[in-house]
Amino acid sequence: MKNIRGKACTALLVATISLSSTSYATSYTVKPGDSFWKIGRKFGVKLESILKANNANQNTIIYPGQVLQIPDGKTDTENENTNNTENKPTSKTIVHTIVRGDTLWKLSRKYNVPMAKIIGANKNINENSILYIGQKLIIPTVGNVVETPEENVKEPEKTKPSKTIVHTIAIGDTLWKLSRKYNVSVSQIVAANNNINENSIIYVGQKLIIPSSENIVDTPNEDTEVKKGQTGEYLDWFKEVNQLVPIGTTFKVIDYYTGKSFNMKRTIGAYHADVEALTMEDTKIIKEIWGGFSWTRRPILVQTGNRLIAASMTAMPHAGNDKVKGGVYTNWRSGDYGPGTNFDYIKGNGMDGHVDIHFAGSKRHKDGRVDEKHQQNVKIAAGMIK
Image 1 (cartoon, one colour):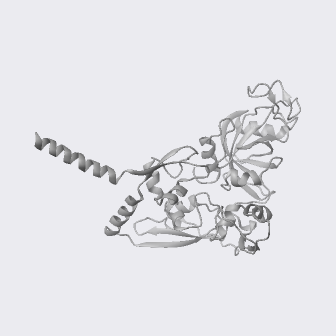
Image 2: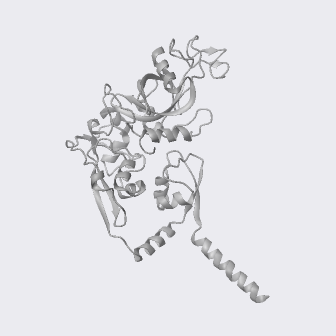
Image 3: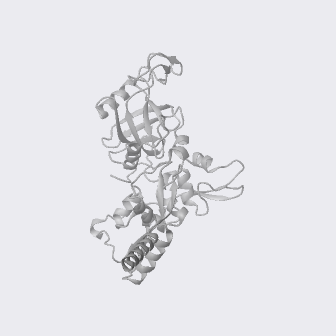
């Protein structure tokens, strides 16, 4: 009996040791702006390890308040040491110069390398970074990775040398003000300067490289026709889009799947853009695309100036009354919203109230939560997933 108990205790001890080697170091509550990549950097854990520990993949959307399991970083080190002693492949790298239409996802497909590895090889980018023409990225490859055959890969188009501006910081400058001044995003300025990030303090006399808006990937002129299936910039709503498309802005919307376009105006909205069709004709086109007014979410592109931004839209007008002045109390509002402030500001456009447009990281007004279907559509419009 003692032998049986002894064996049981030994087995339990072995099991406990085995479990401890794969146990989680801690749990982490997601904050606004977090991504798997950022969390991995914070805890010194590989992206692949965090994804595996949370039964996720590179396309999984996380939201503030969600609790993630963080594996012990030591496991990664141990695995690396083990792998280094067993069949170590011959490693090499490729330096890829960004051309029009490139995205991290497309590069991962072109070179048959996970997007996470490309991000890991380039310290100045993350999964949300915007690429610009002429930018150089390191593409890691290993001997046992099958690269796309040369005959199936089109030679990159030869582009003119990337134009840049060197800006000397003056009193009152901020990254956001510079992005507005030169019509480029904060992410693009950060990517062009290895010594700063989005939270960096800049000082008078400091010199920053400003990539020319002429060399931004997929940024057509306002009059350029956007083709069906073209992708847009993946920009954070709170950090960038809310400033690029402030209340009162009129812009063109292009349906990602059909290429049909119409004009909208942002009239209100804090967590996402509440927008209204400019004319009756615009509303007619919206109804043709959605098959009538609908809560169905569709990937779209928002074109403002020479910027093309990935987004997601529903086509169900709500919270408004076209017959009553906007901003005042009304006894009836569309979408069963009941009495309240009338959020219909554009009259005679064939819709009562406004519809919703979401961007990367935007949230619902009703509960302050991220809408996962909208976020998935934004990534489709950005070319990150299909």
